[in-house]
Length: 206
Ligand SMILES: [Fe+2]
Image (cartoon, rainbow, N blue to C red; front, side, top):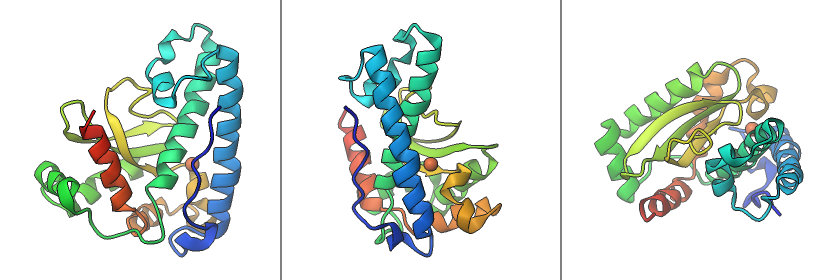
């Protein structure tokens, strides 16, 4: 049985970056629906006891094409949103310190350069999708973007996501309308770098 991530903050706590109604709808409707459907489809496929990462890594083993697509989309929606809601918070913003901060400077040159590059990916993603910061099996940082509810795991990259920016319109449209650029720019005010650092350490210890 899959359970959605339990929020550590209230719907209104990310204002003014994300308004309370967007948060409530995103969490209690969108993520709740992905979770419910994942449970239904995983049960149908007999894989309800597998972890979500394992399921997304081995989608190719699901022979029924429709069921495979349903699990790819809803399992992705479940994983992607659980990550998203866990790496933002009311005390977010600033820059990462510690080993992640160092690795970012080594990889991208500076935090500003990282921010510019991932923002560009978030903005040029045509239609719905995400921009990602992931850790490769060689412990390097890498940026990417994906469509719909795909992610670096379901695409078989072998990389471990540690941060994502949801650029589906449901993530920002109520407040920002067509101005995805403003949402992406403001998103850096709510990134909880201690959470991202936690994911980074976990990915590096694999
Ligand atoms: Fe979303």
